[in-house]
Length: 100
Image 1 (cartoon, rainbow, N blue to C red):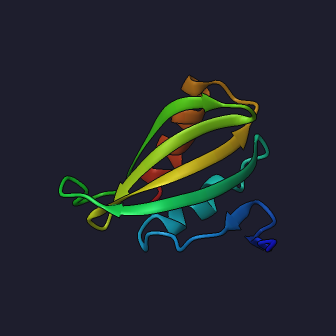
Image 2 (tube, rainbow, N blue to C red):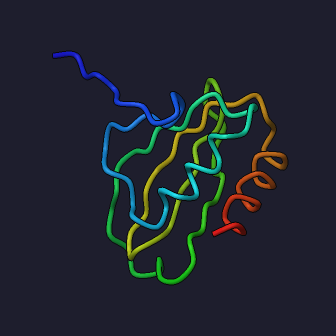
Image 3 (cartoon, helix red, strand yellow):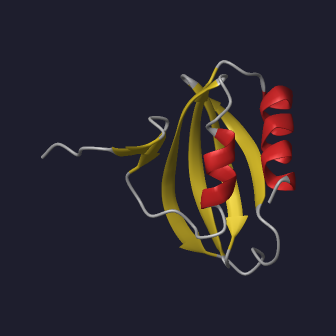
C-alpha cells in the first residue's frame, strides 16, 4: 500500500499529525531556501515538554538531519532535508522559534 504525502508549501510533508504549537514554527522554517523538506514523525507523550516549543538537532541523516521537537506535553521526531550543517540549521530553527 503506497502512502501519498500531503504537502504544505510543497516542503512540509504531512504523514502524521503535527503538534499544535509546533506547526507555526515549521511553517516559518520551510520558507528558507536551504530547507528542502521537513517530514514530521512519530509523536510520543513526555513529561518535560511544557512551555515554549524546543527543537534539538540530534543526528545526521542521509540527506539532512533528524531533530526532536518538544511541545504540548509531547515529543515529535522531525526529519529535515537540507544541505546546511548542524550550527547553521540550529540558528535557523532558533530564529523560527523566536518569531513565535
